[in-house]
Length: 407
Picture (cartoon, rainbow, N blue to C red):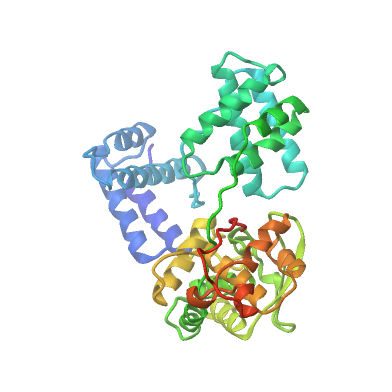
């Protein structure tokens, strides 16, 4: 005897409420369950009913078409879970396109070995992902050229790959691409390929590092303290503004990393693996305390920052940090920028305050001195940035110096 869709819906609603889902979200689930029951004919669940329901998603070319599809797939998945196990899997499920993989076994094995080697090195997840994306693209490039083994790659393949990837990944500098592709060529043990990469002459792009003016920084801090900004947004924004933490470190930050007795934050940088302790200023301590006491959902997750809507799991990626800081900046009247702008501003303010460059470099997690040197040349004076020329009373005659983007 089958299970009625209405009985599954009742139990699903109970599970959603128990997990802390907002009532408006629960209402949306109820509506889709009702649509599913109506489409079934007899109101009974079966895998065939679920497949037909998903397949019948209205295709009208509107921006909401994808949302309809995902919502129906989610409800059908809940029904299938309950029919098979008697419970519901409410975990988040990534909805990402399939990544192309090489078809030849030798190329696939090389990529898999490289991924394992990167993980063994303890590289941050974001770094591993970027390294592996470029390695995968190169192996696919070789495969399209009829090469089924990386050991048979020629120096010419490196030049053609760099031209191809730079044309497709518009907006990404060739210097940045080469820096993240070089580790794979070194892993292959092919000095000739590394030399071929150097011969492509990847150029490092230069641009003026954007930062907040002192007035803007004060406005942002005030908005975070006076309640104009939501507790989580305020805490994330002040972390980035006062410590220069990367988005990946903010996401990984744990409650145990916060020490309110010593007014400090201690964590291991995801990108470098270096342990760092930074001061927790009074405004940051107040914002973190307000969020932990009044704004953070009840959850067993060890991370400081979790989703406000159920399921209350840790933030997924840097886009959540960008959104939080973007909302805070907008509340303070800053029209553009996000977490990276706040990180730039924190670095420039440290340099302006006379903090020694090795200390700034350690706090920011820079692996190259040039990345920190960027901030001793950013404009202050008329443009409102922390520049050593302004601190030394020098003029700003002539065009502004264009600097390397170092964060």
